[in-house]
Length: 219
Image (tube, rainbow, N blue to C red; front, side, top):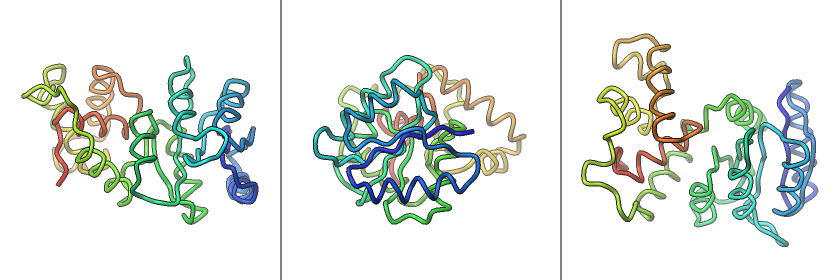
């Protein structure tokens, strides 16, 4: 069972998300928060797998809460940012704070459930068009100030670097495997080693790292 905490200042939004998620059968909502501090407290108490976080909440915003949650000791839940706008500074700040994915508040219920499942698996949400736009705009607005000229590729092997770049283009493991003519399990192994080397815990944060260091470039 996937354990979820909902954080949104609007009770009606939380009620709707709870209904959609619990109808899926494999998701349990273990707590609801109306502010960032409440969300952090619930995460500490319940240690959920995923937090659905509204980044704009009075009484303590979700950006600060996301940073606190992703800074907790293991197990660290994945933070799914739920936003009204697909491009705003709150979302970019959440990326820097360690968010693992994004959905818009008007997303289809099935897409919300799918996003929660993917984050619970550690995949991160990078294959939706809106997410790729957010990442590219984030990289354009906030380049790494001290990025090395070689893009910080040194810790990675050439094949690991190639796979991270393809991941940054939005390709799935299967699509990367098709392009490289290898098994999907081989791609997963290379990606896992790359993530261990650079210290990222999911696919989205790996893509963020690639853009920030210059390993990948928007467009």
